[in-house]
Length: 451
Image 1 (cartoon, one colour):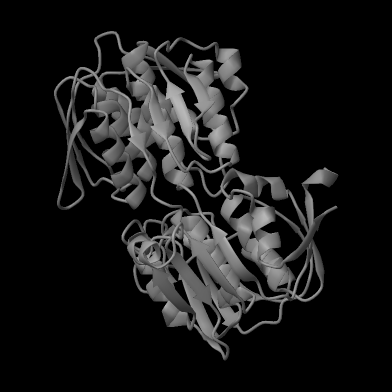
Image 2: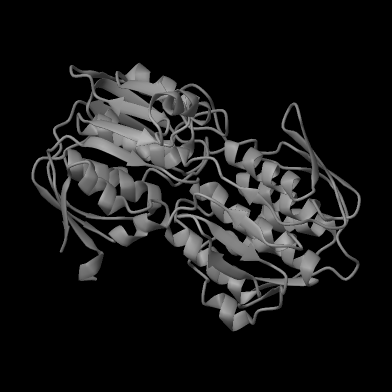
């Protein structure tokens, strides 16, 4: 579609200031959590992204009144009149998001039944829902598979369980939290994900009246309660978007200040950024408030000149290097001198975007082997999950088609760093996770236009 094409005139360093709002990977789950309450919830600093629209639609299908609050970015969700939605209505959202699976626990508590359509999301590997379904069954849910999806019921209610994940899956941990908080008895989850977004979700549930203990060694204990109430919450800032703009500053030899970015959520990324040769300056909110009225803390990222350095990296669950950070950073690594290695251990099919970078002049080779030192669960299997990047490479313009959200932003960065004019197709997919990205590009001096 012509309106889905962005023309990018590359070769200009990005310079200026932008702001990130609440984390995409938290906001949508916080909206689902509102279903569990018996009174309205208020969520602040909500980004205007496609995923928020999708979850708003799903909530409204189930009788939740979703409306804008008094403040910019404020969302009010009233779950007083939760009701069933038809299979056909829910299927309208099939393919748009993977969020419907997380509605199961809250809907089983509120209505006694739930329906999961065929799930969408980015195509970066199968991402099976076995962990989710297995956990729900342990709580007492009955799952009936049908051609259009899965119907769930809880004829005897939901009860606490002892669970251990084979892998610290973020989605499965969210599923357990959203289900266990109102299940009768105590739930113990071992090998849980402990990402900042998970901890923030726990904070929200605690505000609602939940009793949740985070122990050492990835163990979370949840004591079920009979009822929960609404919350008021400002989510953590989006550390993925912040890192994406940081990579853009490095790849284009520019300077970008990301207001709202928070140091403690990004420490692993910041260490790598400095190791490559990027520079950064952190201003926290307290310092900003002491300086100028109305100001906000953040992180300034810039290319200091000279050559960037090659690195060897492995993605991992928190506190490791986040999988969603690797695609934008690989674009910057094409400009580093020497051989860089990126070993992807979270998703098995996340390096396909490198073909487009090679078409622009990058030198990237992908391998089935576990490069980088640590064998992972994809080793000795037929997955291209390690990349070797040789640089520096002079990037030139090309026509690009966006395959998924994070790879799409990486392609956009490559087009901005390349000499000449590129056409980026499927650019609306970026709206799933990046608020007003075209306006932000304009604010940073990028030369882009819709075809």
